[in-house]
Image 1 (cartoon, rainbow, N blue to C red):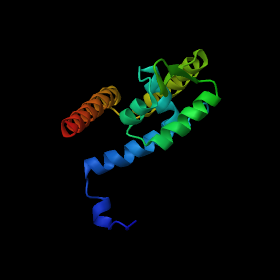
Image 2 (cartoon, rainbow, N blue to C red):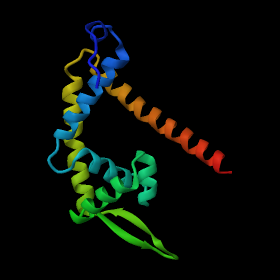
Image 3 (spheres, rainbow, N blue to C red):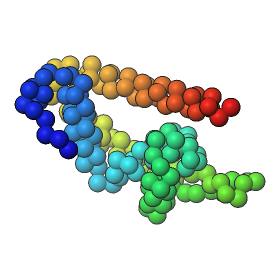
Length: 156
């Protein structure tokens, strides 16, 4: 990693400031719960949102199969997810969130939501920041949809 010059540190680049602040905020959110790590949260939340197959979760989260497999294994081992065979396809497995998984997801999301609200309360435009972060989520969904559509076009 190259050391940045002092001029670049104080350049006022809002995008760079946002990246740094966002990375630090994600770390704070990750530490807000002792029950789930951020990677495990992301997988559990994705399955709870309707993604049933590990391959779809991997695509949605843009993670490799080994990372997804490891997270699924840990979440199943903790009783938060269960694997179900897919009728007619011996290789496929559907994932389902267990009642305990939904309970831990609710607790973790409550903790992270409180942490995020506490962070946003430290700035004058805190409610606007929350709205912007929700808009960022929609932008990420749109970007993923464009990538999927491009992959489909190249496969045809």
